[in-house]
Length: 388
Image (cartoon, rainbow, N blue to C red):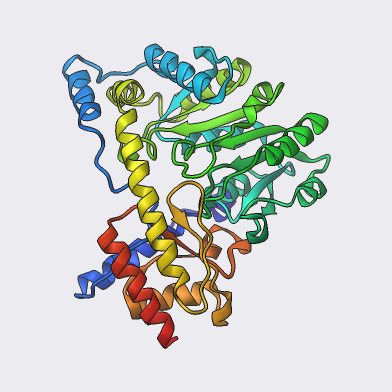
């Protein structure tokens, strides 16, 4: 029997997939389950994007390419990021990866050594903490608070910065809460990063899915482009989760090292998928706008439905496609309530603690599903909680 390296014990996972397995097991036994657990757009990839990939394969884009990505896609990404963040970006700042997760993995691997501290949002995407621990760093959770509309307390952030802080991770719009950082929030992070010479990882994967206000990138603050890495991709914006196409934006000296990690791990990102990404950036903006408009309707419906349930309260998230209702009044842990609703009400959703300890007292529901599912799911939740 193989003896695993000790670092494997530090590796976490995404609870959404564990819940999916449990839900599928119930369905295999004949149970009806409404799925509100996965963070994946239920829309099809735009047909012109699919056709671009088909054409690319016919044209021979089926072989190795440069580890940093196709030149034409890197140019298009640089132009897109420059326009959407009001910054000047050259293609040599861009590295294309198979999905956006590798950017956070490679960056933490490249920067964080044993004992270095990384400040990350909590509740937050669980892979942040997993990768920090796996790479030998010390995760320092930054609570996102409902009283701050699921943003952080600036004084609390400052108190967590130390001489060991190597990286600050921010995510806006945010998973799992849908929260959106303000200009003042970003200015606070920028000031601390500048004063203490800290790199910032700005996870902006939901930057195009916003209902109130507008997306603000920390890179628009003077001087922050040089000390920030932007993480973004095509999965959420263009309903391309299975295509595995993401990218990072970073100063060229760092991009060289991240590209080397690409070479050492996956060689490159599928060229035909990159050609599909090129088409998405050029001609799929209308599909994204339609998708966001539908998400807004679903958000409004679901929040209203949840707020009618006695004992439950839910803020309107300004971005992403999740709601994060408060269930503290029921006197049970988030894990207990989530499991109860799956087993007894037939609704698959996630405990807030799937996103960190500060998610206790909350549930995460994804509204990346049909209105019919949201209506049925919210009614089952109401009926289930009435029996709890």
